[in-house]
Image (tube, rainbow, N blue to C red; front, top):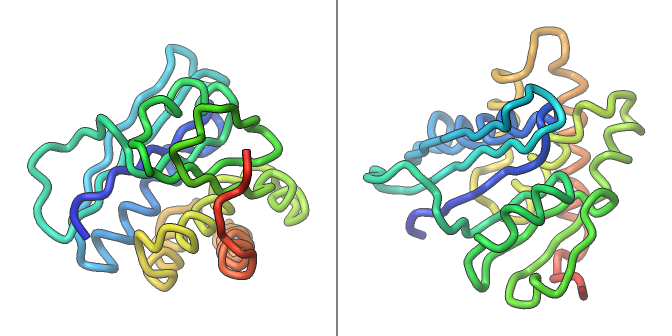
Length: 186
């Protein structure tokens, strides 16, 4: 496996950057790979477009920017609209299925949906939808091992929220592992 580019995208306040940081930390610190992370924010702190571009590789990374991601994790409709066209043909689109409506542009990519917001609400905090998506991303893409991502979640979330965030991770991981992850029809 060569360099893999991942774009986590949504709006400010969804934990987009934290999701990218968790996966990058898992891959680089706990799985012994190389990773880079760049971030992009809209002018407002909350509610505007936000993305985290992550590169993961078994070899040193020479250029830290993702121009055409292999994987897009879309947490909002605006993120899908903005970053969907940048996804490589044959790439993988993971999306919050209750917030993102797919269109014909997904014909050349594999799509995988999860009701991450609903799962987060069932756990008692809508804010952990990003960690549900991290678990789902781990299961579907295998970009990092579940053990490494579990440890990265523990080390990345605010003190006192570890149990909730680990439950969110496990919910997304379980959904990705138990559900047949074949591309959804669009």
